Amino acid sequence: MELEEIVDSERNIHKTIEVLGKGGQGIVYRCLDKDVAIKVVLRDGDFIKDKESLKQYEKSVLNLSFKPIESHFPMSIPLVTLKEKQGYVMKMAEGYEPLKTFLKKPSILENEEKDGIFRINNAIQELCKDNHYMTLSLSYYSQTQGLRSRLKILTHLAKLLFRLQSKGLVYGDLNLNNVFYKDNSAFLIDADNVRYESEKALCVIFTPNYGALEISQTSKNSDTTNYNTMLSDTFSFAIITYELLNMVHPFDGNKADDSVENFIELPWIEDRKDDSNRSCGLLPFFLTRDLKNLLA
Image (cartoon, rainbow, N blue to C red; front, side):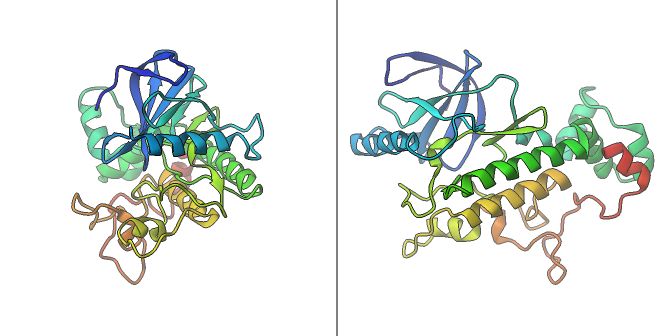
């Protein structure tokens, strides 16, 4: 579904130019005014327009302003809700990119190499020898700011989560599309999901492959309702950390194909007792000194 123009509740018209990310609740668009982004909440891929849902959503967005979030906290706070749709307009600092840009599948890199868009690092190729899959991944790893930058961004993200949790707040839907970075600093979007851990949410929010198992299984079992907690936020952070540092999702192995909706239900790719979901994309445990220097 492509959007061209979106009207907010103050009757301002915003023109969307690209999709910044998709999460468990909807889509975030960058606008022609690059300092502005818009989140549109969807249900089964369509707009939510019924009056009762809109009223509840506007109330939840308004309640966010009463939560103990510092004014300078690096998170995009809703400025105004949308007209006749669930969603809101938010401030978006120019130059930030989503964490998902740190990851690319070797098959895509291989095509980009053929087209002259991506170049393999010759030193890494020599160290990896005949492992072309690993050569592609590690070359991209080194060309996207390497290990040191990833660790700094993840450290800053951990501090942001700590600051929220120290106030009793849960972020709710942590994934690679909701975390942006610039100059080794993290920035959060999708702030409308932030709530107190003790506060009942309007609905269960999670992004497949990033939400904790007890959260994702809630959507399948109507008899139980488990809302996001500080622990489920920490779980999502661990998934992101592993994926950024290892260039592979910790549950995206041989069993993870199109028939599997949520990789979290599969065995861990490094499970010592169950190797049914191993991954050929896992980076080597013991990198040589030369390779460590190239990736730093």
